[in-house]
Image (cartoon, rainbow, N blue to C red; front, side, top):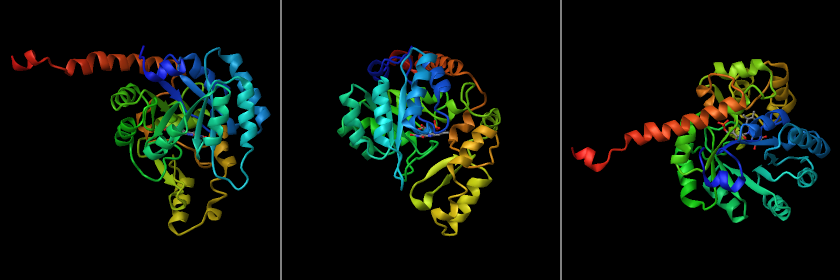
Length: 330
Ligand SMILES: Cc1cc2nc3c(=O)[nH]c(=O)nc-3n(C[C@H](O)[C@H](O)[C@H](O)COP(=O)(O)O)c2cc1C
């Protein structure tokens, strides 16, 4: 067992989190993560309506009696989803933890706290993490440049970003991006984090509700197999490299606008990747950690292995590196 401020504050057995994942954060995966003793998040906007989200939360409760949460990703949009209604569905469901991501979560934090719900905000910079702390969130996840999804525009990798955040924050800190095994977990703890958040690693587990062929593609991919799209729109996204991502970059390079890539990046095509098992069908999120992923374990095998190997790493390999003064001078 590894006990940290995170495990204590959130009542979770292991300091491991499965972050929100569009089209993937569904009941089967989140319950499997919870049953493995880690903290999983359903992804609110994967459900077409707030009513469907309420049903998905019920379905998760039927599959686990352990704690789990809901991710609410707040993105700027011309026609935004009905956030207040999704939020209300979460409040009424009895869920006790929410992960917010994207824009400033101020109005949501206030409502969630009023109903006794803890909030973890995911940020990509120290200044946004401090802002979230000042809003009263209960923990911050900090996503380094390695991460799948939106790494922000600062391009600071975890090796610098995590300790920089740890130096400034008082609340529990969750390290995110590029973590896939015990070495990443132990490194994150050494850098000052209280837990790790993983997306791509959980995407490639037995219970992840995506086609097996996409999981096999992740195993085949190495650490170079990602692309950064939307850089020119200052809305960078790290995605699995494929013919579609390369086409988007090529159009951006020619000065193309979002309109020019809109069809290529359509959410329905990305969803099709997972459902039809064709990794070339559209844009799908994956991180550099693909290079460390060599199998498709169950969530229980993954979490048990990570925690066991982390213990071993700390107690044997790292402890074995420490020489007492007397030994050194002999
Ligand atoms: C397939 C996929 C979909 C994702 N969708 C979301 C999302 O909807 N909202 C969100 O906050 N983060 C999303 N993320 C980011 C993850 O929650 C997490 O922050 C990130 O994957 C961490 O980096 P890693 O993949 O290197 O572990 C997604 C990640 C993946 C792999």
